[in-house]
Amino acid sequence: EWNRIEDWVQLQNKNAPQGVRNGYFSSFDFWWYDTNGQMLQTAYSAAGIALGCSAAVILFSSQSVVLTLFCTFTIGYVLTSVTATLVAMGWTLGFLEAICFAILIGVSVDFVIHLGHAYSTAAAPGEEADRGFRTRHALIQMGPSILATALTTILSAIIMLFTVITFFQKFALILFLTVVQASIG
Image (tube, rainbow, N blue to C red; front, side, top):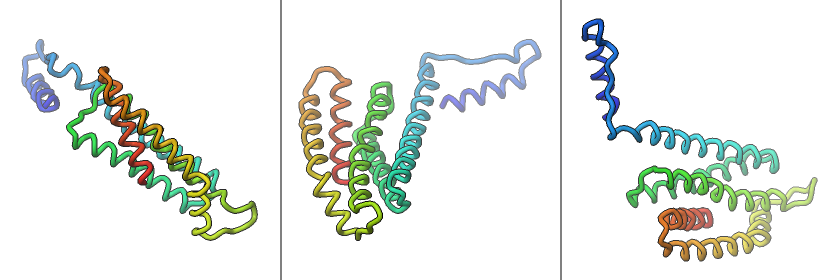
């Protein structure tokens, strides 16, 4: 809507007499327009940076392009599924949601990178291990720790859902959804 009004004002300025061609409009209805646009752009940038950095770390540490692709896809899945769930619940991007989104990015990377690291270090240096062995090793060695972390995080999120402060309620829901999706993914 702001763009339509701005285009109309610019058209009127072109057709206006010489002395009044610098007209502009302002309204309290649009005072958040730029701020919200910047928050959205920053959220996209943060997600892209997180995906790129995590892919670089995974590629550097595992030296496996296939593992890097799978881990990056899984992190993207967690980000997308939680964001889609929140949008389906009627959330819009505001200050609190932007802060929580930054936390979502960090938590979504955490579980995936730990499992990826356990998978890539399953064999001794110089040895080759098949995928089945690496998968079992990762799930047996890292799985219990990740599930315990997920359980305690989910329980703390459930407790925070009943707080009075809005930020903690929103943070708890995002944390809950992120841990569930990261555990499933």
